[in-house]
Amino acid sequence: MSTPPTERDYAIFQAGNVVLQSGRTFRNMALAYKTFGTLNAEKSNVIVYPTSYAAQHYDTQFMVREGGALDPSKYFIVICNLFGNGLSSSPSNTPWPDVGTRYPDVSYFDAVQVQKRMLSELWGIERVALVYGWSMGGMQAYHWGAMYPDAVERIAVVCGSARCAPHNHVFIEGARHALMADAAYQDGVFTQRPVRGLRAMGRVYAGWALSQTFYRQELWRQLGASSLEDYLVSAWEVSFARRDPADLLAQFWTWQHGDISANPLYGGDLPKALASIRARTLLMPGDHDLYFQVDDHAFEMQHLRNAVLRPIPSIWGHRAGNPANQPEDRAFIEQQVNELLAWKNPSPSA
Image (cartoon, one colour):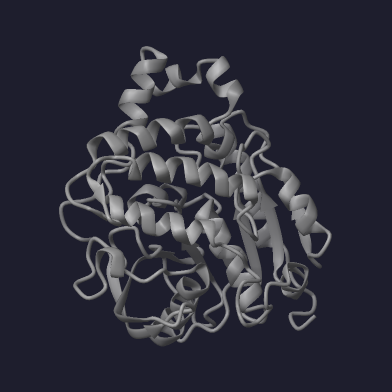
């Protein structure tokens, strides 16, 4: 978890009134973003880096560094804050009438459309070299590939999927309902801060985000915890307390409804949506991930035309894809992404 600077270090793209998939109009929709590096004259060095669940760019920008795969000395990197994260339009910062229960459901399809518009309107960017994302960010990368097959050269899906799997849906239900079970949640809104609900949600999440082997080998000791209980209290009971609870529920909705085919382009036909992706695709699940499974990618690989499957060999479970404390996992990810960036499409229109 990163500490935000005292002064705002990001910008806002004002998208105006956006008609969503649901038919609702999101008025004055705002996308928070942060850039690194310089756009070259050909506008060919663009990397889009969407954020993950409950994350803001402060939490994910550690992957951007000179000498790394996401190198700002080579690439123009745009971190897009996903709607519902408290910086982009969210229940916590959206004025009436789109607040609380009236906050509109925002799909990945909606979010990626706004991201694409922003690149075009602010910088004249019509094609990106790479969309890189972890978890919900990986699901957005998949959407980029399916929604804009002619505009994306490469996608890196790190611990993500093309569609939220049934077991993934069930995991989210457990965490979501732990939060909503707090007495502060009444008739679809939080009447006060759900302290017990946030703690309970964190404990539920802890059992899914890391593998059985992580806990068996007591790797939480590497993070400074003195006992398992200390780890749950110090790392997980506080993990989501930094976020607005309505924001957390809004992003859960987006996550559960993630499906690259659930839109007018593909009408729910997932194989068709996968086959439409022309980008060179890197699928990088964690081999011990409990909810974004390697098996899900095995199905997707049957329909992708230009993809490689490179599971991360790590007992850190889902957290393997967000290697803030795992140098070996980070080295593996960056090696795979560097190879992806070195790949050249012999026929961009193919």
